[in-house]
Amino acid sequence: MSSVVLITGVSRHLGARLAEQLADDPAIDRVIGIDATAPRKADLERLGRTEFVRADIRNPLIAKVIAQAQVDTVVHAAALDATTGSLGGVGARVSPKDHDVVGTMQLLAACQKSDTVSRVVVKSTTAVYGSGPGDPAVFTEDMHATGHAPCGYAKGAVEVEGYVRGFMRRRPDITVTILRYASLIGPTIESPLTRYLAMPLVPTSIGFDPRLQLLHEADAVEVLRHAAVAEHPGVFNVAADGVVLLSQAVRRAGRLRLPVPAPAISFVGGLVRNSGVVEFSAEQASFLNYGRVVDTARLREGFGYLPRFSTQQALASYLDALPGLRGLPGLPGLGAGALRAVESLAGRLARVV
Image 1 (spheres, rainbow, N blue to C red):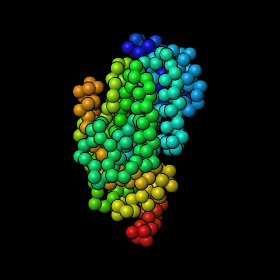
Image 2 (cartoon, rainbow, N blue to C red):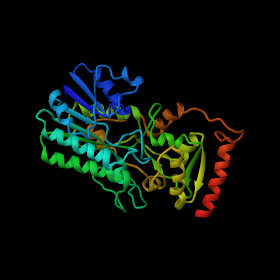
Image 3 (cartoon, one colour):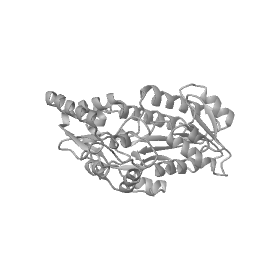
Image 4 (cartoon, helix red, strand yellow):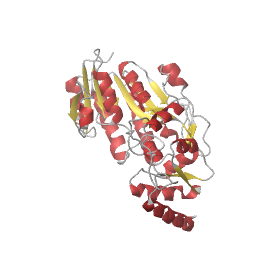
């Protein structure tokens, strides 16, 4: 059992909820939360006895925090933040190279020098597998991206895992767990997928209806907790059972689909990105075309965890908390301004395609 646990990204959704659970565990002596920004007021009470340290893990001073507190378990929940960025995984608005990769490098360097750290847990993403027409029906942990080399956010995720594997070779005495999360969803978490499904007009590619595999926020936190309090060495896909088609998700959300030719999905994504609603990129356009499904046998049999929510149940949990849309009669969520935007978009698409 861990005695002193350090959690990165404690001011964010998963980090805060993990800290809450660990702080309630009397078997854990101390819980230390690290983040570059202070927790929101709503999360302060949730953190309980968690000791908050305002620090950027990209700063080498993180090694002093670990040494002075004699940390034995490090949970890198800040890596590939679940609340911002990529639709096809869990990404970050800032440069992956600057934040995720450099931050992970500094944190692992601190752990490598430590005499007390015995367990490291790193939150990763299924985006490392990519999305493309040549993908297998189901990805296992031993597979790699098919087709084109990873780019953008996925490339950052691959680099993060590369540094973790290097750390494992240098410190084989430390138990390392890599958790590859599917797209997160739930009643309280805000993620790229939840923002995408909350749009009154949801752009989709004509001729494509990808399979989506989701993960409920409660299961995401519980898997992190299990990894923090017991040894689970290895790489694990973390996703719910079952899949849902994108068309089904949009329809159940009560949104209107905006079908566009596949070559124009990135163009539409650019317009959406400029609106500030959700981030789009070429890799996210591929995810909206091809989706991604992973095998979770190792999670159930090797890790010993069975998600409480299936993909369908996770989606329903989010939709139950989704506010209703109001707009013009017969066209939910759209006002006159939005209608003019749709007309303008249609004109631009006609010139592009």
